[in-house]
Length: 167
Image 1 (cartoon, rainbow, N blue to C red):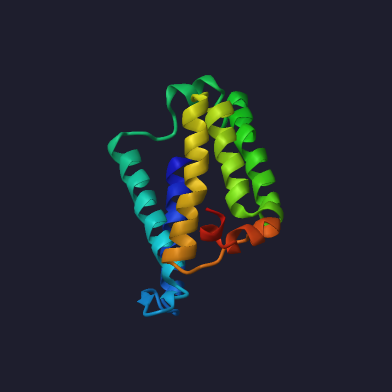
Image 2 (image 1 turned 45 degrees about the horizontal axis):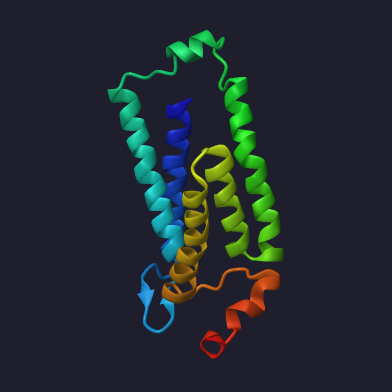
């Protein structure tokens, strides 16, 4: 199954990279990245990682018939694995649904905190600091460097406050 999914993702990534070259893939002066910049580089990354998984599956000798798969009756995923996917997948869906309402920044902060503290069982201080740092990083990368506005929802006025007047 690893080989099948990696092969599909590899060719999908190559196709998206090829199609995205119809738009500028470089950084345009005073405009930020061209329309094909993010799709091109993300799809190249997906293709590289997929190629790595393919190579690893052949070098490592994994043919999908490992001990865990044989013990589970050749099922693709165990029930415990499925529950783990739901523990992250359902909150990820909630985050996506809340993004347009409360902003991608607050939604991602809540999701990162949930994943670190409740799923990953990390400490409270580390979970809070990473949950606060991720949205700040996203803001500077997209809003300031790439000049791509992200959904801010009801928090939109917060981003246009004159912060220097408050201090």
